[in-house]
Length: 146
Image 1 (tube, helix red, strand yellow):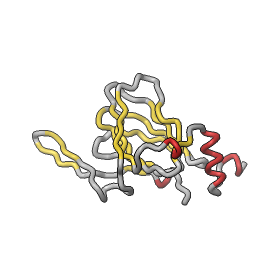
Image 2 (spheres, one colour):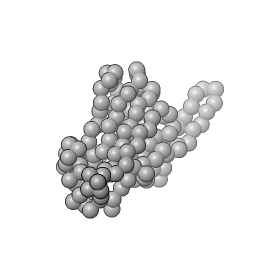
Image 3 (cartoon, helix red, strand yellow):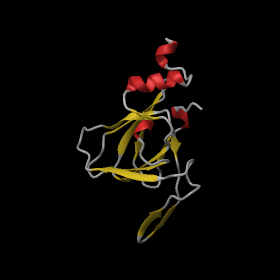
């Protein structure tokens, strides 16, 4: 199966608001994958980029628990940039997507639910290896269409 940036999307989670504040949650069935890991980025210095890789099989859900950040996506043919800035509106990223996370605001917390535990073999760490992987699975990329 070949994925695209069009399949990446915001997920609307429940939000319960009253005078005490807001409460949101994510549970099994709320996202398009079963999750096995949570990790988070915080205290990211201004101007620093995170990620800069793709995954072969991993599905992810990106949250902004505080502040905001940008998520830049590339599927070999199309690109897309989204701003993640609402705790109850995470963004789903499917496999086969190159991603870069940057422009963190002061105090931003980027939390990510992942479909699998950490596995180095799932990472495509260079853009060239990402494009080669797409070619191997039969997905057209921009440079092949030129």
